[in-house]
Length: 219
Image (cartoon, rainbow, N blue to C red):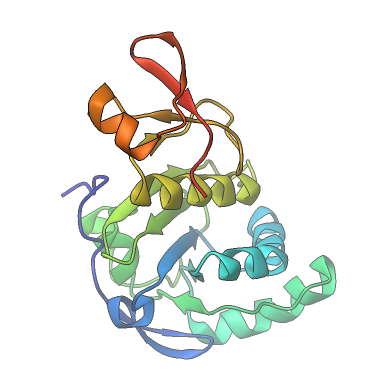
């Protein structure tokens, strides 16, 4: 079955470069990002893994854990890590899950059930659909899914921006407008009546239209 936003992220147990991961237990009370790769020793993914390692402190400030996944054994991952550090100038500082039996890729609907049971002999093209970013909340629900083609490097600055939006909107009755960045004005959600909005936002708001109520971002 296809995964949808708001559904519980499938739980799993798998080996990684930092030992066994029991996914829901590993998330704990944090947010989490799981991002997947179709094959080790692929050029675009090498750049992504290095950049995410540099960006990790920003996610940690937001109580977000990061974990990667690639369809190859953990032993291959460990050899790939040396290449990542050499070419990207940054050692990996988060776990990289091995998925040589394709278990997690199938569980997360990135590969069909009939894809086989081993990564051996498979190419990156065979696994082209394993290029998804999942943002998962402390409630273990899927908050975001982004799937990219193999030829396009993912924008993890955008993922960080979305995390800021998700965390803000999870705690306040607001939504974020186009191209919103942390600290900018937000929009009061339509489900909140004007009367209730006045209680939450006593300083008022700017409303170019009745349904478009713009207010300073809650602190």
